[in-house]
Length: 294
Image 1 (cartoon, one colour):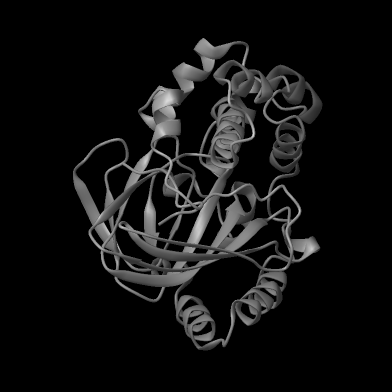
Image 2 (cartoon, one colour; image 1 turned 30 degrees about the vertical axis):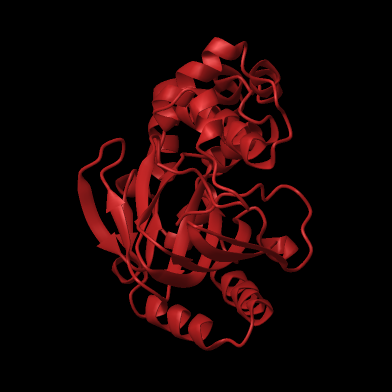
């Protein structure tokens, strides 16, 4: 279950949402990381869930990458954009996605998810993440013994507040130094984030002083996707947040609010990134922040 709420809004330390229906029951506890971490980590999400039958969700590409520590039954992951079962994963980390993925819950799960920005994931991993694109990698394969320590400490913490406070401490120590990231890539990421994907790639290339070919290759190597695709993911991510919060009811307003030229451009990205038209995507929303049903 990969939750992607809007981490840009101001949150209390812990906000809890609960749901119970024929689908099953779930509790979501959400909190903003410490201020110093927010360029790297957007939100903490804790969950407890018990489904009455297998529940498959459609996870959508945005400018974030989750790290998931799951204490319960493993998730069933499917090949991106397809229905072939790819792997079972209990705890995992992803790179950038440029297409949707299907994630199935079976039985009871609980755990904690950290929604990193892509640049935060790059710093967290400590190396370029191009090879993690469209991948869900077992936590221990990336972080070794740190994965075991993180899981144990979070599992034994007595409350959501204690878990999130621990994450603040351990991530502050781990994410303190981002100097190994090329300054030009960091600058481009900041420009695209600040403009919600509307900044001109050509103007960014002129600003960083690299050739366009070298800039695109380096951005993709470090972050996992090209700057143009990243800009599209930023715009589509805003649409996903607006759909989840219900802040815009008209699809044309939804498109314009996210920086699309018109509704047809939104429809193109929705079909590429989500496999559905925007209206169909809206209809697939589960209640109480439960994500998008597949």
